[in-house]
Length: 176
Image (cartoon, rainbow, N blue to C red; front, side, top):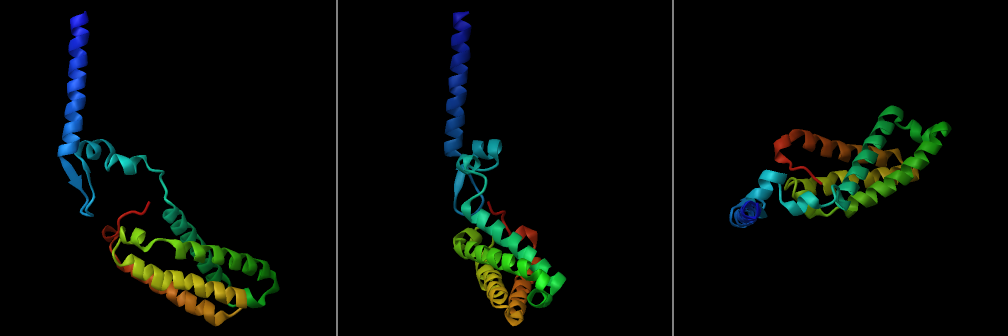
């Protein structure tokens, strides 16, 4: 009985050593320059550090906040147009939207461009040049009741959306 337990323990120790050795010696990569062990790839689908990280980074939370707010504002603009500035019953919505736009703009502006570049090399330029600019113009237009600024923001927002739709999904890596 003691000999069997020793043999089983020896096999387990040898297996663990072999797994660590294989994981250290056989590396895989996604082409970004980072690499991880083959065992991590087979078990977790990625390196263990990113597997154990909290699921959503601060950049991702900012990305989501900005995208959700922009979609809500775009729908508000589409549904009400210039009435947002002239209809007294929409004044509360306009003021709330102004506050939300400020938060979304600041969040979008704080996203690291390197973070966006990990998804797509053109994304940082398009995001900061069109999307963040749209949020800024919308905020300015809503706070000053300036429909021209809102129209400019909508144009910039649409440019960003057109660019996103012109890209193949495979050209983007998921953000986290």
